[in-house]
Picture 1: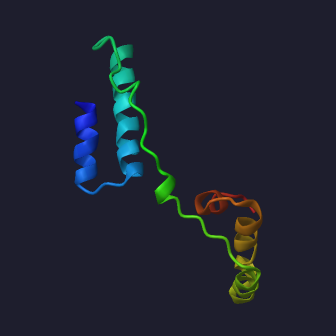
Picture 2: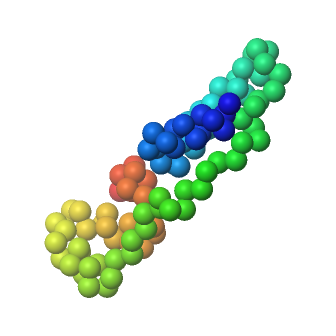
Length: 99
């Protein structure tokens, strides 16, 4: 049934990453149901996650693009792209930094 669900969600046009998030949620629900004594086995436990390789978005700026980015940034914003470029932190992690 779970494999049929996965195939159906893919037919609806969902990306692998979205289906994986749903599977993760379903796993969690079954683990909680086991803890509460409603079920004995988690049927999602052995279902493999779908590959997300094709959906990864990675782009590396050229040196010229880095220079133009730093030149365009206002003084108070310059640290943000600098941290992003030199650490690889994601946007959310940078926004949560205490400067």
